[in-house]
Length: 398
Image (cartoon, rainbow, N blue to C red; front, side, top):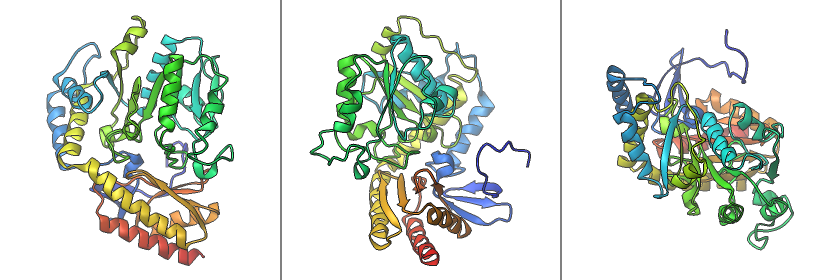
């Protein structure tokens, strides 16, 4: 294979997809519980999205970023009406990593000499700065400081305390020495880090700190945004008010669409110094995709389905944990979940077993977790089948 080996390849050649299913070059069917790379919330080859794409490609795909288009206007209106009124400025990009970079660029324009708060086990993207700020990345914030707060993982408290009596001492301790900061780059749920859901009130405490210091609160919702957590946006679980919101993945349902949303106040604080131009910024093609995805999510009530089905699935995973000593914990919110193992060998073996049985999930040795990010349209009976397959796999590996 001519592909540069930048990531482990499972040796599977996929030739088509439909709904929740993928088909290999032998026409074998697989249930895709990863939604591609956590993107295809509407499933693969959604007919309405394909129709919108075909119509748009017949009309106009790309424009110089200095021009406006009705497609981008429509997508912006659709997105902003889902958000608090103060979030009223948007730019359309291609990937979540690009969008994180722009969010950080905005923060540095406002406070060029100050650092940024990120989190252990956090993941912010694959481009240079976003990667450096992610867990295991170099401490490089272009010569400025980086503060790494411990992951808010209550069952493994980094300061040996107990929620809610702890009063967020893990966060307060990490921030105590900071008298100034450019930004906090915060994931409402730490997806790559093992689907770690912060305790209720944690985000509020962070927001209060950011307001006191005048730091830009960046909500990195590339994975959690657009319904994945059972709300349109992860920040809605705590009624947060971000200064900058970063979106991607589900926004394009597998196509390269991302967005940065901010406020008129942040725009003013940049004092006319913000200049950011990319080849495919605000393309009409992106607008047509995003607006159609939002319309389908709304009309089919898929956000509520995420909340209801996700809660049911997490309960079933917790039942597995109670019965199987090889399992540590089930975590999740909406239709994003993780099943943690004591032994990384068993976890990796179970992922391989599931693939042989036609179920696609992923496993990350660093967190010892199987992760599930199914399409929002996944039938309940398919999740039941997955649970049964997991149990058979555990019996065969025990």
